[in-house]
Image 1 (cartoon, helix red, strand yellow):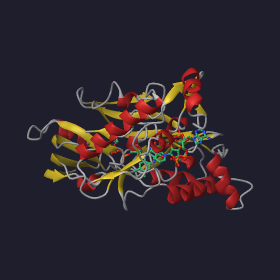
Image 2 (cartoon, protein in one colour):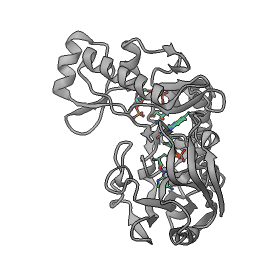
Image 3 (cartoon, helix red, strand yellow):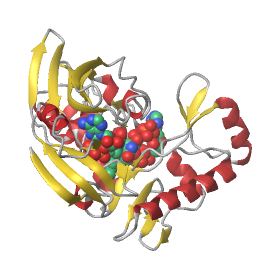
Image 4 (tube, helix red, strand yellow):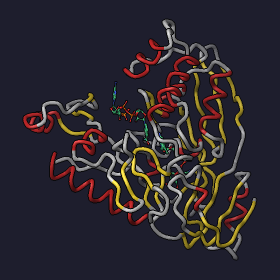
Length: 337
Ligand code: FAD
Ligand code: NAP
């Protein structure tokens, strides 16, 4: 464990905004959470950070920030069909994907190159290219900040939904995930349902996809399309794709017949939020150092010295403009501190 007083969090999140933390505690073992809980000299734990790729800071943190550095990937057991893999919460997500690919274990290949750590994967049930973390997560081990004990939640209890989970609801701010168990498939069935993957595989001349070629396709698409936070500060999609009823869709389609949609739950459809923000004219917008990426209207960026409050205010204005034009209320995906 390493404890730093009055630390800047600028290099610990991908928006690159300077905010201070009263205490930053880097944790290397789950047991250190129990040690921290009895250290009277430290302010209470206020927040846990992984890779900081899904958070916007708008104010300093007066408490203790935990930076999760708990590493390790191990195979727990296997049967004819599956292998159960435990990844500690501080493992970089893409390193787990590489582990799965090298052992030819299927289930998370479509989630290649998503930034961040394993511990945050259940928090918003990360998803991309037709797959979600919930497809493979079996259970999650957490530390309870008030009860000061470890407990395990099975996947049903985690209530993983579209970019949502119990960790963003009832357990928000109350738990620290220390490890996640995954059930991976020994006989992978590559998922190429997402149009962009099929196109990329075709381009690469792949006619019999494997999890390795699907992951390579996802990596190629992501590198060509998505802004790299090491080059330009951002936290990926700022808003969730709104889910509306088919009745609402029919009304909006009268004025905007070209509006794309994808089936969600029964009687519901998902609208790409990036299409809505682009149509509302936000693509490439910039005020000071806060802006909207010129090629991705769903990604808000900090060009250098934007304040978190400026980016938050920009997101409010975008939400208002989308609502007044389409009658759809966007919801932020990025966590606001
Ligand atoms: P952080 O930003 O550190 O934390 C996010 C939230 O989770 C915070 O509220 C934090 O307190 C909480 N948290 C973190 N770790 C723990 C823990 N151990 N226990 C309890 N709570 C915890 N997301 C997708 O779903 N799909 C994508 O395709 C995708 N693409 C992205 C592309 C780019 C370029 C970027 C910048 C982001 C993208 N994201 C995507 C968003 C982000 O990468 C994911 O949400 C990721 O899981 C965040 O991980 P993190 O470790 O950086 O979390
Ligand atoms: P895209 O391929 O241009 O598609 C735009 C939107 O349409 C996506 O958000 C996607 O919803 C939806 N979509 C497209 N094809 C679909 C299909 N066949 N079935 C269902 N939904 C479909 O999107 P993009 O911006 O380049 O992102 C590609 C993928 O990476 C998406 O899955 C996206 O979620 C993910 N991503 C997420 C983040 C983040 O921060 N959360 C950042 C970058 C990329 P879904 O989002 O539900 O897939």
